[in-house]
Structures are given as C-alpha cells and as structure tokens.
Image (tube, rainbow, N blue to C red; front, side):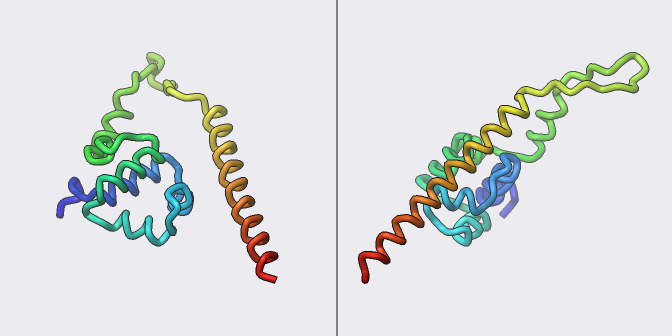
Length: 131
C-alpha cells in the first residue's frame, strides 16, 4: 500500500518529530517496545489503539490519519522570512520557548522514573511476601 495510507509509518514519524522513543510510548501504553515496533510496521491500526497513541503523542487520531511529510515541510516553509536587505541574516520565528520544552521533558522523565521506582518497590514487596 502507498505510504500515504500506512498508519504505522505515520505514527512513527509523528513520534520521532515529537522526540518520543518507542520505549517511552510503550511504557505510557503499558505494552512492550516490540509491540510499538509492530504497530509502526502495520498498515492499519485499530481505532481504540490509535486513539490512545494519539493522546500520548499530543495529537488527534485524525491528525495521524491525515499526516503527510509534505504538509510538515510546507508548514515550516510558511514562516516569514525576516532577512535583512542583503539577505545575509535570517530570523526564525519560534512558536515555543525551548526552556519550557526542556522543563517539560525533565518533568516527563521524572514521572517515568517515579513509575519505574513504584513498580520496583511493588516487586520487592511481592518477593518479600513469597518468603
């Protein structure tokens, strides 16, 4: 099938653009990294799974279905060219604060580590109870 209809590849591209690893997406969904890999190789994805993935990626299921790399390129090409008259200097209009994004990533990592720590503590308690 054409790549324009390959939902798995679209999920992969959006995940990569968002800077999210397969392992992180898997952890959020409560499945294995291998399962994410399999989803990203799939031409079609069940609506329920697509909705969950879309929520984690911060987009709508329709955004995944309608995603195209050409649209992304066109989007970035629509930024105003604020060059000087001689064309030597270009300004880029950023729509987000990089520091805010960095803080957001640190908070997400903190949350993931706390989940991992909680899981490990639960395992320890289960092992203690087996004795």
